[in-house]
Image (cartoon, rainbow over the protein chains, first blue to last red):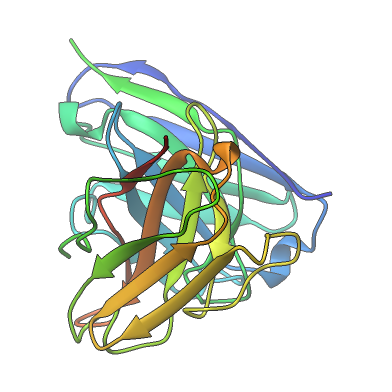
Length: 120
Length: 112
């Protein structure tokens, strides 16, 4: 069965950095696009970033462009999100999500999420 | 990118039908048939309910259906059940300058 397990969340000061990981299993990771989606406490979903199955294309929300970097290691079945210059408004649960096909922006499997808190 | 517009809340009694709207622009909902819907129960990860405007993934009840007209997509839930009470989000992508995903603000469904 498909499993996505995020890790790396925690408390970080404004301006700091954090790297999230998402370990994937139960499907051919190297064949699917992958996304990061976040949800601020008590708020709605916000799409953050996407990476193609082979890492050749990456897309970002305007709110994180230039500060966050999505990457993947297909040999380790792992997705990453490097977050720099963190702000209070980046506080959220971060979910990794599998694309239904290659680049549909349909999220058919989600991890349980990892909480990132940006606070001094 | 601007979020898609959904009503903050809807409600219905068991057995009734409800419809949740999702309004975007010609750059997202109106421009493509790449609309999806997600159900999220408190403290849980979202679940894909509808994709390609009206297709249901395997395992999703046929009480859930989707449609689109112009810049507005809709999710209809028929035969409401207590377990349908949840938050619902629509989603699309926009390619105005680059590919980006966009969600609606979410709709809280209360089953009375």
